[in-house]
Image 1 (cartoon, one colour):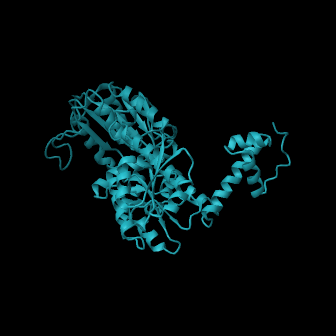
Image 2 (tube, rainbow, N blue to C red; image 1 turned 180 degrees about the horizontal axis):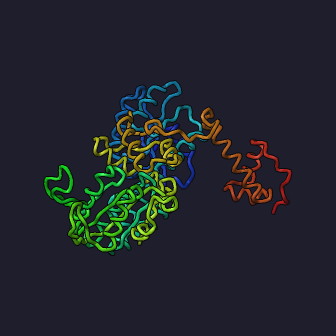
Image 3 (cartoon, helix red, strand yellow; image 1 turned 90 degrees about the vertical axis):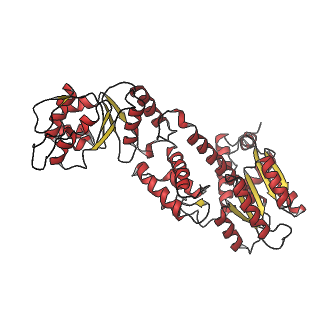
Length: 457
């Protein structure tokens, strides 16, 4: 895919210098004023724009540049804008970032630093585009509410789609916040019972003395206060799906009664001797390790085999390759609409933080973090600080300037190329995509020892 860069600069000399900073694989367009820039934006649809704030008719100020920045972000919100300012003009650079610019670059022109900043913007644009495509492609599933791109979740989704049309009792296991109830609803929605009731009850949220009557119902006069008969959740779900969340917390006495229901498909209301037949599909979920509960005697082994005819093991967010950012992007879009904060995007440090964080609270924690960030973000860019996530910058990098970062990366790449080619300078230069004279110059520059070099071809 062709990478497109738009350079907005009114100085012809700087235009030429900036154009020649970039390699031939980059499609560069130049505009010298606001009108030409907007025309190029619509025509070329660039991924990255470098914008000099000092444009005619206000070349000495920044009003025209800020106006153009606002229009670019409105017309093409996913375009990464790098604002170019004077060395002493940090105030305008900060203001531009607050308005939604991706980055800033300070004159005078340094080809290496400019190339680094522009390439970084391209990488961020490509990453956001890939994740946006994944989020809108329905991820190859028909499962409402599930956002996933990882092989781990794709396996779960494929299994769910096969299981849903059947009536087998299904157990969903996974950490808190992984979306077990969403999957249970998906099983119901994709089944022949979709037009029926989906009745959910959390076995851990209801006191033990009330849980039996909530599940099985009761007859009038069954206990003090039972002034009339009441259907339980199981009976209410007749013809539909019953979802028993946190089944691992069900008291032992009720486990025996639930087992009888699963075997006989009849309900005994509290205070009744007349069994009531019920046609219901049962889906259970738990965050607990049922094998351990069985071992310590707090969960019936025969009940476990009844509820786990099919088991869906939902991986934690940290175990889903690439899903964290996909989910965060989708949440940001949804929450942005709800809060009337459209076109918000994650900054590069936020993307890195999302990918690096372990998400112990899984999707539930992510919802809270993104919602907070949507409210707290000052500009169009959400930072890791807005998300209250730890930065993932390597130790010692925070004090380095861009030139030092580039030089360290370049030196490391050269050494790796030399080592992988047994210090054959011709092969190493091919690996690096540079000429041999250039490689010699670079090894001299970085004082890389080439004394182990093999005879050249």
